Image (cartoon, rainbow, N blue to C red; front, side, top):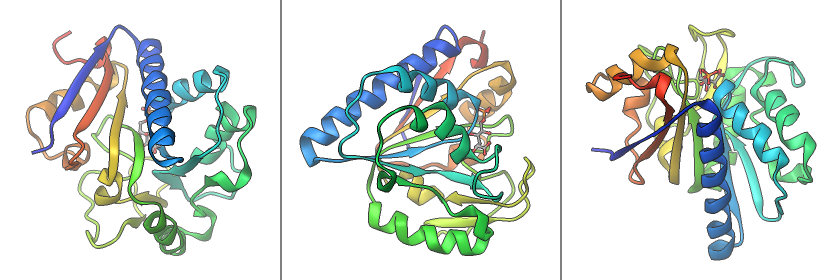
Length: 227
Ligand code: 6PG
Protein backbone atom coordinates (compact mmCIF):
# COMPACT_ATOMS: atom_id res chain seq x y z
CA UNK A 1 0.00 0.00 0.00
CA UNK A 2 1.19 3.47 -0.85
CA UNK A 3 0.80 5.95 1.97
CA UNK A 4 -1.19 8.89 0.64
CA UNK A 5 -0.96 12.13 2.58
CA UNK A 6 -3.96 14.39 1.87
CA UNK A 7 -2.95 18.01 2.38
CA UNK A 8 -5.96 20.33 2.16
CA UNK A 9 -5.60 24.04 1.48
CA UNK A 10 -8.08 26.86 1.16
CA UNK A 11 -7.78 27.52 -2.58
CA UNK A 12 -5.74 26.95 -5.73
CA UNK A 13 -3.33 29.80 -4.97
CA UNK A 14 -2.49 28.26 -1.64
CA UNK A 15 -1.96 24.84 -3.25
CA UNK A 16 0.43 26.48 -5.73
CA UNK A 17 2.30 28.30 -2.95
CA UNK A 18 2.68 25.14 -0.84
CA UNK A 19 3.93 23.26 -3.92
CA UNK A 20 6.51 25.98 -4.55
CA UNK A 21 7.71 25.81 -0.96
CA UNK A 22 7.95 22.02 -1.07
CA UNK A 23 9.89 22.07 -4.35
CA UNK A 24 12.35 24.71 -3.13
CA UNK A 25 12.94 22.88 0.16
CA UNK A 26 13.43 19.52 -1.54
CA UNK A 27 15.78 21.19 -4.04
CA UNK A 28 17.90 22.64 -1.24
CA UNK A 29 18.24 19.30 0.50
CA UNK A 30 18.97 17.41 -2.75
CA UNK A 31 21.68 19.92 -3.70
CA UNK A 32 23.18 19.78 -0.21
CA UNK A 33 23.19 15.97 -0.22
CA UNK A 34 24.04 15.11 -3.82
CA UNK A 35 24.89 18.35 -5.61
CA UNK A 36 21.96 18.07 -8.01
CA UNK A 37 18.17 18.20 -8.11
CA UNK A 38 16.23 16.15 -10.64
CA UNK A 39 12.69 17.42 -11.05
CA UNK A 40 9.94 15.95 -13.24
CA UNK A 41 7.38 18.53 -14.35
CA UNK A 42 3.71 18.12 -15.19
CA UNK A 43 1.37 19.75 -17.68
CA UNK A 44 -2.00 21.17 -16.68
CA UNK A 45 -3.36 24.36 -15.23
CA UNK A 46 -2.76 23.55 -11.57
CA UNK A 47 1.00 22.99 -11.94
CA UNK A 48 1.16 26.09 -14.20
CA UNK A 49 0.08 28.25 -11.27
CA UNK A 50 3.04 26.93 -9.30
CA UNK A 51 5.46 27.57 -12.21
CA UNK A 52 4.39 31.23 -12.43
CA UNK A 53 5.19 31.61 -8.76
CA UNK A 54 8.51 29.80 -9.09
CA UNK A 55 9.49 32.24 -11.85
CA UNK A 56 9.13 35.07 -9.33
CA UNK A 57 11.38 33.54 -6.68
CA UNK A 58 15.08 34.33 -6.60
CA UNK A 59 16.56 30.87 -7.03
CA UNK A 60 20.00 29.61 -7.90
CA UNK A 61 19.32 26.86 -10.45
CA UNK A 62 22.83 25.44 -10.39
CA UNK A 63 22.47 21.67 -10.19
CA UNK A 64 18.81 21.58 -11.22
CA UNK A 65 17.83 19.15 -14.01
CA UNK A 66 14.33 19.33 -15.49
CA UNK A 67 12.36 16.44 -17.01
CA UNK A 68 8.78 15.99 -18.18
CA UNK A 69 6.24 13.44 -16.97
CA UNK A 70 4.34 13.52 -20.24
CA UNK A 71 4.11 15.37 -23.53
CA UNK A 72 1.61 15.85 -26.31
CA UNK A 73 2.74 14.77 -29.80
CA UNK A 74 2.69 18.16 -31.50
CA UNK A 75 5.41 20.13 -33.32
CA UNK A 76 8.29 21.30 -31.10
CA UNK A 77 7.13 24.85 -30.38
CA UNK A 78 3.41 24.20 -30.54
CA UNK A 79 1.51 26.40 -28.05
CA UNK A 80 -0.30 23.37 -26.63
CA UNK A 81 2.75 21.38 -25.72
CA UNK A 82 3.47 20.98 -22.03
CA UNK A 83 7.05 22.10 -22.71
CA UNK A 84 5.82 25.38 -24.24
CA UNK A 85 3.59 26.11 -21.25
CA UNK A 86 6.47 25.41 -18.84
CA UNK A 87 8.89 27.60 -20.82
CA UNK A 88 6.47 30.50 -20.97
CA UNK A 89 5.35 30.33 -17.38
CA UNK A 90 8.73 29.62 -15.79
CA UNK A 91 11.91 28.52 -17.56
CA UNK A 92 12.10 31.30 -20.16
CA UNK A 93 11.87 33.81 -17.34
CA UNK A 94 14.78 32.56 -15.23
CA UNK A 95 18.46 31.66 -15.73
CA UNK A 96 18.50 27.96 -16.55
CA UNK A 97 21.09 26.43 -18.87
CA UNK A 98 19.60 24.75 -21.95
CA UNK A 99 21.41 21.48 -21.22
CA UNK A 100 19.63 21.21 -17.87
CA UNK A 101 16.25 20.81 -19.59
CA UNK A 102 15.30 17.40 -20.96
CA UNK A 103 12.10 17.70 -22.98
CA UNK A 104 10.38 14.67 -24.47
CA UNK A 105 10.98 14.75 -28.27
CA UNK A 106 7.26 14.16 -28.86
CA UNK A 107 7.45 15.68 -32.35
CA UNK A 108 9.00 12.33 -33.38
CA UNK A 109 5.69 10.57 -32.72
CA UNK A 110 4.72 8.45 -29.72
CA UNK A 111 6.79 5.31 -30.41
CA UNK A 112 10.08 6.92 -31.35
CA UNK A 113 9.84 9.61 -28.75
CA UNK A 114 9.11 7.04 -26.04
CA UNK A 115 12.19 4.98 -27.00
CA UNK A 116 14.45 8.03 -27.10
CA UNK A 117 13.18 9.32 -23.76
CA UNK A 118 13.46 5.86 -22.17
CA UNK A 119 17.27 6.30 -22.27
CA UNK A 120 17.08 9.78 -20.79
CA UNK A 121 14.91 8.56 -17.93
CA UNK A 122 17.02 5.47 -17.27
CA UNK A 123 20.08 7.69 -16.84
CA UNK A 124 18.22 10.04 -14.51
CA UNK A 125 16.66 7.64 -11.99
CA UNK A 126 15.89 8.04 -9.19
CA UNK A 127 14.30 11.46 -9.52
CA UNK A 128 14.25 13.78 -6.55
CA UNK A 129 10.74 15.11 -7.11
CA UNK A 130 7.97 14.09 -9.49
CA UNK A 131 5.23 16.65 -9.87
CA UNK A 132 1.86 15.46 -11.18
CA UNK A 133 -1.64 16.72 -11.86
CA UNK A 134 -4.80 14.66 -12.05
CA UNK A 135 -7.59 14.86 -14.62
CA UNK A 136 -11.32 14.62 -13.95
CA UNK A 137 -11.25 10.97 -15.03
CA UNK A 138 -8.41 10.19 -12.62
CA UNK A 139 -5.65 10.21 -15.25
CA UNK A 140 -2.22 11.38 -14.29
CA UNK A 141 0.64 12.35 -16.62
CA UNK A 142 -0.77 10.72 -19.83
CA UNK A 143 -1.81 7.46 -18.14
CA UNK A 144 -5.53 7.24 -18.84
CA UNK A 145 -8.28 4.92 -17.54
CA UNK A 146 -8.70 1.67 -19.44
CA UNK A 147 -5.28 1.81 -21.13
CA UNK A 148 -2.64 -0.68 -20.17
CA UNK A 149 1.08 -0.30 -20.69
CA UNK A 150 3.99 -2.72 -20.68
CA UNK A 151 5.28 -2.50 -17.10
CA UNK A 152 8.79 -3.21 -18.38
CA UNK A 153 8.97 0.22 -20.04
CA UNK A 154 9.88 3.40 -18.24
CA UNK A 155 8.32 5.58 -20.96
CA UNK A 156 5.27 4.59 -22.99
CA UNK A 157 3.63 5.69 -26.23
CA UNK A 158 -0.03 6.70 -25.95
CA UNK A 159 -2.07 6.63 -29.15
CA UNK A 160 -5.70 7.00 -28.13
CA UNK A 161 -5.83 9.48 -25.26
CA UNK A 162 -9.38 10.65 -24.50
CA UNK A 163 -8.02 14.16 -23.80
CA UNK A 164 -6.71 15.81 -26.99
CA UNK A 165 -4.37 15.36 -28.64
CA UNK A 166 -4.77 11.55 -28.81
CA UNK A 167 -1.05 10.92 -29.37
CA UNK A 168 1.14 11.45 -26.36
CA UNK A 169 4.19 10.10 -24.55
CA UNK A 170 4.15 9.38 -20.84
CA UNK A 171 6.41 8.18 -18.10
CA UNK A 172 5.01 4.86 -16.91
CA UNK A 173 3.86 4.19 -13.34
CA UNK A 174 7.19 2.71 -12.25
CA UNK A 175 9.23 5.66 -13.52
CA UNK A 176 6.88 8.22 -11.94
CA UNK A 177 7.28 6.40 -8.63
CA UNK A 178 11.07 6.11 -8.84
CA UNK A 179 11.42 9.34 -6.90
CA UNK A 180 12.30 10.53 -3.44
CA UNK A 181 9.06 12.56 -3.36
CA UNK A 182 5.92 12.54 -5.49
CA UNK A 183 3.60 15.56 -5.30
CA UNK A 184 0.14 15.53 -6.87
CA UNK A 185 -1.60 18.90 -7.31
CA UNK A 186 -5.39 18.80 -7.53
CA UNK A 187 -7.68 21.82 -7.56
CA UNK A 188 -11.23 22.73 -8.48
CA UNK A 189 -14.68 21.28 -8.11
CA UNK A 190 -14.30 19.33 -11.35
CA UNK A 191 -11.84 17.00 -9.58
CA UNK A 192 -14.03 16.28 -6.56
CA UNK A 193 -15.65 13.13 -7.93
CA UNK A 194 -12.29 11.66 -8.96
CA UNK A 195 -10.88 12.40 -5.50
CA UNK A 196 -13.90 10.69 -3.94
CA UNK A 197 -13.40 7.62 -6.16
CA UNK A 198 -9.68 7.54 -5.43
CA UNK A 199 -10.29 7.69 -1.67
CA UNK A 200 -12.95 4.97 -2.03
CA UNK A 201 -10.30 2.65 -3.47
CA UNK A 202 -11.32 2.65 -7.15
CA UNK A 203 -8.64 1.64 -9.63
CA UNK A 204 -8.12 5.07 -11.23
CA UNK A 205 -4.76 5.60 -12.93
CA UNK A 206 -3.60 7.98 -10.21
CA UNK A 207 -4.47 5.31 -7.62
CA UNK A 208 -2.14 2.90 -9.38
CA UNK A 209 0.93 4.87 -8.41
CA UNK A 210 2.54 2.54 -5.90
CA UNK A 211 5.36 4.68 -4.68
CA UNK A 212 7.66 3.70 -1.85
CA UNK A 213 8.08 7.37 -1.03
CA UNK A 214 4.31 7.68 -0.58
CA UNK A 215 2.30 10.38 -2.31
CA UNK A 216 1.67 13.90 -1.12
CA UNK A 217 -1.61 15.16 -2.55
CA UNK A 218 -2.02 18.92 -2.29
CA UNK A 219 -5.63 19.84 -2.91
CA UNK A 220 -7.97 22.76 -2.39
CA UNK A 221 -11.28 22.72 -0.56
CA UNK A 222 -13.20 22.76 -3.85
CA UNK A 223 -11.66 19.40 -4.82
CA UNK A 224 -12.30 17.84 -1.43
CA UNK A 225 -15.32 15.49 -1.55
CA UNK A 226 -16.77 16.39 1.86
CA UNK A 227 -16.86 20.15 1.25
C1 6PG B 1 -1.83 17.24 -19.90
C2 6PG B 1 -1.30 16.84 -18.55
C3 6PG B 1 -2.37 16.17 -17.71
C4 6PG B 1 -2.77 17.15 -16.62
C5 6PG B 1 -4.07 16.76 -15.97
C6 6PG B 1 -4.56 17.82 -15.02
O1 6PG B 1 -1.18 16.96 -20.91
O2 6PG B 1 -2.86 17.88 -19.92
O3 6PG B 1 -0.21 16.14 -18.66
O4 6PG B 1 -2.00 14.98 -17.10
O5 6PG B 1 -1.77 17.26 -15.64
O6 6PG B 1 -5.02 16.58 -16.97
O7 6PG B 1 -4.68 19.03 -15.69
P1 6PG B 1 -5.32 20.32 -15.02
O8 6PG B 1 -4.46 20.69 -13.85
O9 6PG B 1 -5.31 21.35 -16.12
O10 6PG B 1 -6.70 19.93 -14.63
